[in-house]
Length: 226
Image (cartoon, rainbow, N blue to C red):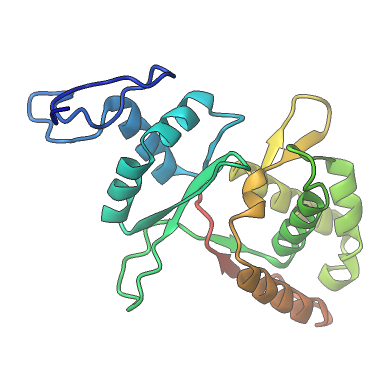
C-alpha cells in the first residue's frame, strides 16, 4: 500500500496512513482530519471518554500511534486505558527536566483536596461498576466534617465547599446526569494520579488537617485543565 493511499476501518474512520489529505492549499499536516480533531481535543482536555465521546474514542483507538507521535512532538504523553474507556494527556516525563510544562496544573485548596480524595475513594470502592454516581448532598455531608479545621463561619464554609465542587465540575471530574443532584464521578480519577502522587497528596492533606485554624493553602496536581 502506497503512502498516498487512503483506507477506512470497519468503523468507517479514515486512518492517518493517508498522507495527502490536505485541508487547505498550504496544509503540510499528515494526520487525517478526524485524527487532528481528536489531537486538539486531547490537548485542550480534560480527556476523551468512550462513554461521552464515542466518535472521538473510535478515532483515537484507530489512529493511536500517529496521535501519540504528534503529542510527543509537543512534549506530551498519551495515557490510554481501553478497559476504563479513558484517554488523556500529561506532561512528558523527560528525564533531564528541561521539557516545557504544556498541560496546565490545577491549584487545590484544602477543601479541593478533601473533595478530590473522597471522590477517588468512592470511585475505587465501586471499581466493579463501569460508572459510579454520587449525590451532591453526600459529598457536602462528608466535607462538613472538616468545618472545624476550616472555619467557624458556616456561611463562608459552605461557600468554599460550593467553590470546590464548581472547580471539579468545571474540569469534568464531576459529570452532571440531569437527574436531580446526582453526578457521575469521572473515571479519569482512577488514572490521573500515580500511587506515589496520591500518597504525597494524602500526606500533605493530613498535615494540613492537623493544623488548628487552618487557612486554605494551595497545592498543584498534574491534571489537564480545560
